[in-house]
Every structure is written in C-alpha cells, then in structure tokens.
Length: 152
Image (tube, rainbow, N blue to C red; front, side, top):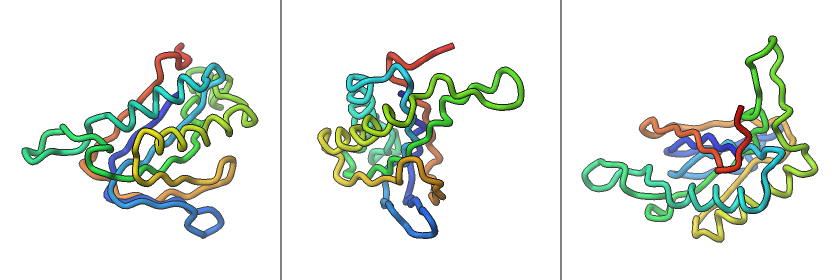
C-alpha cells in the first residue's frame, strides 16, 4: 500500500461539483492499494498514519501525532501512485490492485483509521473523477509504503 500524506489546515473533495468529504486540520491521504496488499498491509498503514508524529508540539518540533491532535483524515483513492513512468510515455499501472480488490481494502483503510482512534475520517468516492481542494500546512508531505508494497 502506498500513501501520500499531506498535513493540511483543511481539505475537501468534490464529485460533480458537490463536496462529498472534508476536514479541518489533519491529513489528506492519497491512498493506493497494490496488487499484493491485504488486510495486514492496510492495518499497518492505518496504525502508521495514526501514530506518525507530523504535527508540531509547543516548541514547534514535529512531536505530535494525528491521534494526539484529534485532527481529521481525508482519504482519497489514488491508484495512480502505482504508475510506473520509467518506460515509454504512458504510465503502467500493473502493480495497482484491480478495482474489485482495491475498493473493499480502501474502504477498510478508512474503517481501520477510525478503529485506531482518528476522530474524523472522510473520503471521496472510489472510482469517480474527483477534485481535491486543500490548504497545505507546513508544508509537510510524506510518502508512506507498507512493508509489503511492490518495489522495483
């Protein structure tokens, strides 16, 4: 599993012009399920996201987690994180899970974030064209991969 995490002041996702999910302070998570991912990969990522210390403490150091701050998580499906652009001019997505496998794992990722204690978890609509609005905070942007993520 791959996640691009961005610390945000606020973020929202729109489908057909309507906001379908939004958060105040927290993290925007662009999340991709790989063809080898399973419940364990998703659980590992949910735990990592909840506990990752990316928010400032009183001294301004990144010492606080999403769980510590009570921030929200906006989870947006993003299979293109598995795009391989090394050969030719069209990305290859052979390492991304097929939608029928990815959708339930993506949904489970949001559920597991809630189980970890994330107070507000919102998301986009799987497989739909979405527009994302966000105000980055920091900026802080991190690339996360579960231990079993496909590597080339």
